[in-house]
Length: 189
Image (cartoon, rainbow, N blue to C red; front, side, top):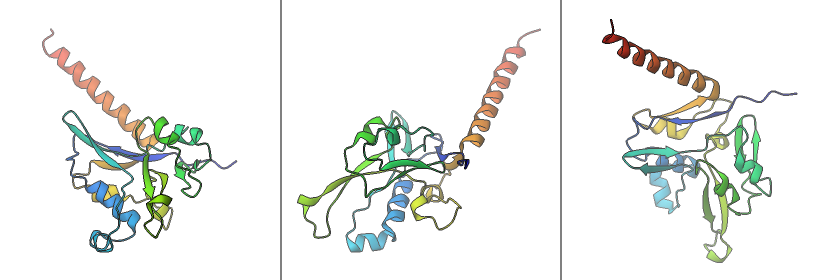
């Protein structure tokens, strides 16, 4: 049996995020397959697969976490959302736009968009689920390179794999405990 890859996902450090939305713009132009100037000239509607949100005084982008047991994939009635090699993918051709995936995503990472036919006829528009796929659909090789990660000026956005992320969290908690322990020793004799 083929062992699936450990899931990779986008990690955002909210302390570094400026809320500049460069990640949204980079994502939208990456999927438009052209630069911003060309997209504007052609009148393309740019649709990022991530979104920057603000909660109180903190801003950060929201992206798919590539969940191991993805609720969106389990809930999708058509099987348009599925898991393969550590990625959660959407077959947009099979998506019926029912929005169940968006309702069950615990991170709010699924965006429902309206596609309009080539004639611009709004009567034939159809909803489609879209989400961050770590730029998988535009990759030419096994090397994952995400447009949002490359565009972030403060390096607040990082592509991580679960195991290294878990180790880093444990390491950070150990440092916090050591600092707290050293503070309690200072006044003691």
